[in-house]
Every structure is written in C-alpha cells, then in structure tokens.
Amino acid sequence: MIKPVASAIQAQPSVSSTPVKQQPAQAKPQPVAADTVNISSAALAAFQEATETSVQTAKEAAKGDRQAQRLLAKEAAAKAVLE
Picture (cartoon, one colour):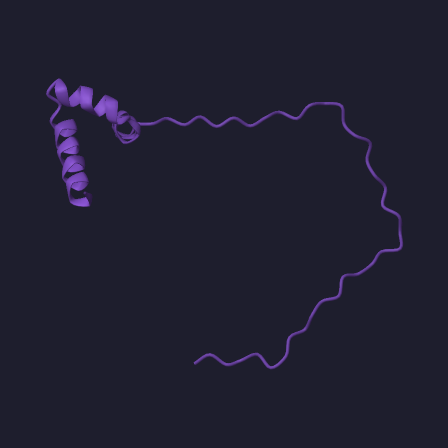
C-alpha cells in the first residue's frame, strides 16, 4: 500500500560570497566525435520501399514487381471505399 508523504523538505540554494574566477577561453579546437552507422542491405531496401513515390511504385508495377502491384491494388481499393 502506498502511504502519503507527510512533509517534504525543500533544499535552499546556497549563495557563495567568494568571486568565481573565469578561465581564459581556450584557442585550441576540440576534436569532434564521429559515429559511423552501418545499415544492412535489408534495412536499406525496406527504407527505400517505404520512401518511394507513387510514380516509382507504378513504374515497378508495370515492370512486373508483385509487391508494387499489390500496393497499387490496395491503394485503389482504399480509394474506392472513400469515394
């Protein structure tokens, strides 16, 4: 069972009276970290399929691509339902 908290203690920020010394700006550039990402060929193919335009899909369907043909049929059926 969860019990409510009766009181909460709030911390007060401390104020320092000593001046803060600032370090001079460094003129040396800091190295930049670079990450390398490798994408599998299956992931790349899936990305390309997901981002292709309807014109590309129609061209692929005309060339006999079964996946493109199914997608066009699915889109046509959805459009017919909406009209």
